[in-house]
Structures are given as structure tokens and as C-alpha cells.
Image 1 (tube, rainbow over the protein chains, first blue to last red):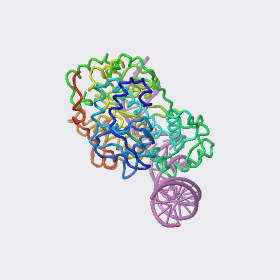
Image 2: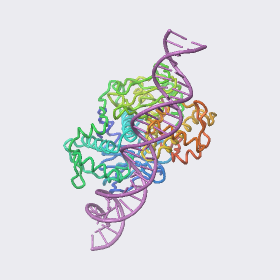
Image 3: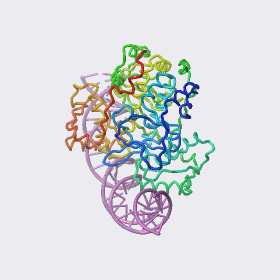
Image 4: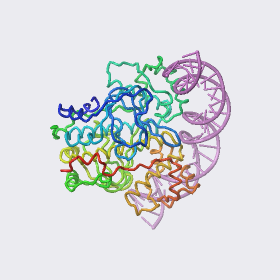
Length: 241
Length: 241
DNA sequence: CGGAAATTTGAAATCGCTCAATGATAGTGG
DNA sequence: CCACTATCATTGAGCGATTTCAAATTTCCG
């Protein structure tokens, strides 16, 4: 629930309503497809464990990794407005998801309006993350794009497990990094090499060690955004569930 | 209101609540800044008339045009979760905006929960639009990116004024197109030339005529998304305001 | 252990960028 | 109304970052 409570603290009733909306729990193995792009949308997912990718296919087979869903994120939401899913969902690691049928999601807005508002605000955060990724892909060099992805993952994991340190379990193939950064896989390989040569990161098997986060941040020019806590404009909304 | 009612038809009470949330109306001249990136967020805007750009500055002065807000869109929403505005808002044409203070926006979720849900769903649409733009910028060539922008604008204007035809009033400088597509302004110029040479578009002063929309769509590989109308999963939510 | 997928490296091609300069257009103030 | 200026559009030339193609190695999974 970390993502939701980042903003305001949900009441017990609100948390209960959310738990109530969850129908079942599913497990996926690494690289397993969760939802196909273009399929019919009946439910969304709460990521309990693992990494999930949101992937769009365009331009004769080329793929864009548009979003990394981590534990605490709601996956599949963007597609709910359309007849066909805009993004495919893929388990990037072994993953555990809770299923939330759309009709139960809709009821949350009636039963717990403030929770609905929190979901709304969280979706605005997601829009900003997409805009940031767009700005990186649109306006910076290959090494900056890869650095930005590293910074993004580093920061998000830091929130999830503050004791995690600088060693990141890295399940993304260079092909997937390429799909996220808008580069070719081969150039991603060379770019990782350059980051290592510069002493910014090191590879330890399937892990990546962040050696110099300040330099990575400076190189990537990736903005750090501060979330508003308990904003005044939200105080007037009743938290009655 | 077109954007909201695209999904479900709001009741009179819901429309009244939304009107009530609007505080004042403001006019901006072409190229005037509406909101600075990094400023404090106290309100959002409903675009009544004109085009508004959402711009992110990154990477030592380079800018990304992340979103075109057209009449009926809510501008400034993405920033509400943060202490500082993530995007700057710029009037691309002369523009008229209604101001909605954040506390009144928040109250909508309590007073008209179904309207809150509609705002939520509309935000998911916006996420998909961003993902589509990201996929275009990340995965396609210069000519495809410019074609995709043309198709995007053409489709959105077609919804706003179905009688509009193939002649588009084009207020975007090549510099701004470049900021949207992740290209240099000079290359945008050459790319427009190529599109004209191929007979896909023609320029008539400050207007652009779309000569061959099918070929533009095929070239750009830009997906057409169908909005879900009156979805079953929403029927159970009360429309009482 | 076998086979598929992922990584790595080299060489050549190309797309798009930068630099530089010119021409066109529009807004401003006298 | 016109000169002035800033912005925008256009064109050429050369460069450089990234892609593509090809092939060797390594790693991973069953």
C-alpha cells in the first residue's frame, strides 16, 4: 500500500474497502505474459511482489517498455478507458499479483470517495513519471538515458527497501533496457560498458552495484520529485468509508 | 466537457458540481506562460479555448513538449501530487482557461463520486496518450514521429470539430514540433519538406492541409484507440450528486 | 548436457545533429 | 506607415552518435 499512503494516510475503513476489492491472487513466472496488448480489459492488478513491465508494440514489432510496475503499484489501470488493452503486461521477475475486477474498483469511488481521490492523485504521479521518461528519451543521449533508468530504479527500490543499499538485483535484459530507453540492445551493451569504465556502476553477476549515485544523477539530469504530504486542499474531504 | 462525456454521460447535478468548482476565467495571449515549471501548485485549469502546451525542461535547457491540451482538457493535473509543478504550461495560441482551485477539485470526489471516477478514467486515457507518444519517440524514425504528431492533432481536432475537414490551423513552430518529437528543429524542417514531397501534406500559409491521412497513419504506425462507452462495470455506481 | 537466449565485439552504414548563413515573417514602437 | 528587431523557416556541408549486420562467447534453463 506504500504508493497510496505516500500521499495521505488511509483510514482502517478505506484499507478494508481496498482489500475487499481484491478478488484473487495469481503467481507468474519470469517472462510470463500477464495480459496481452489488445485484449479485453476486465480487471486491474495490484503488484504484491516482483517486477512487472508495461509494454507497447509499435512500428512493426518494435516494443516500448513504458512502465515498470513494482510492489505497491496498480498495473493495468491505463487501459480501463479503452475497448482493448493499450499495454501488454509481462512479469519481469517471478511476480505475485492481486486481481481487482473493474466493477469493484468503480465501487471504491462511491464507498470510499477519499480513497478514490487518492487513486486519482496517484495516477497523476504516474503521468509525471511518464512525462519524465518521455523527456529523457526525447531529449538526451544514450548514456544519459541508461543512467536515468538506473537512477529511476535505484530511487524506487530505495523507497521500497531503505536498507537495500547500492546493490540492485537486476532482472532487466539489455534488450528490455533498450526497449525502455529507445535504443538498440547492442548500444545498450556498449553504454553499460562506458558507465562501468567511468566507475559509475559495477556488475556483480546479475546484480548491479551503484558506485556513484551523485554522478549518475548529474549525468542523467533526471529530476527528483518531492511528493506533497497531507496537502491542505485534501483536508476538507471526509474520510468516512 | 467533451472529454468527460466521451465515457459516460454526466447528469445535470454532476455538470453543475463541476461548473461550481470553476472559480474564474483567464485569457492568455499566444506564447504567454500560464504556469512555470517548478512553481507551487494551487489550482488546475480547464481549457475553454485555444491550445496549451505542457513543457518539461531537462538536460541543460532542452525542452520536451509532453502534452497538447486542447479545449475540453484539464491542464495542470499531473503536478497536483508534487510540491512543485512538474510541467510548465504555455499558451500555444491565444487561450481561455477556467481556474479550478485544488480544494474544490477534491470536494468533487465527495460530492459527485461518479464524476470523480470519470476524472479518474480520463486520467488513464491521458496515461495511454503519453505511453503512445513515448513509444513513437522511442521507437520510430524522424518522419514517423512528425507524421504521428500530425495524425494525433488531426484526430483530436476531428473530434472537436467534425466539420473541420483536412485543413488544420497550425500554431506550432517547427521548434515546438521538435520539442514534442525529440528532434532538432532543423531536421523537423527537412522532415516536413519530405512529407510535402511525398504528397502527404501541403502547407497553405500557416495552415497545413492533410492530403493523405491513410498513408500518414500507415507511415506513423500510430495506433487508433477506441474509447469504451457506458461500460457495464460503471453501471453500479450511483450518479447521485 | 543440449539448446536457446543473452552478452559481447568489430566494422560499416546511416540517420539525424551541429554549425553557419540566408531569407521570410510578424510584432513593436516611432 | 515604415523602419527595426526578433523569431521563425530554409538550405548546405560535415560530423558524429547510434544502428545494422555478422559472428563469437557466455549464460541460463530444462
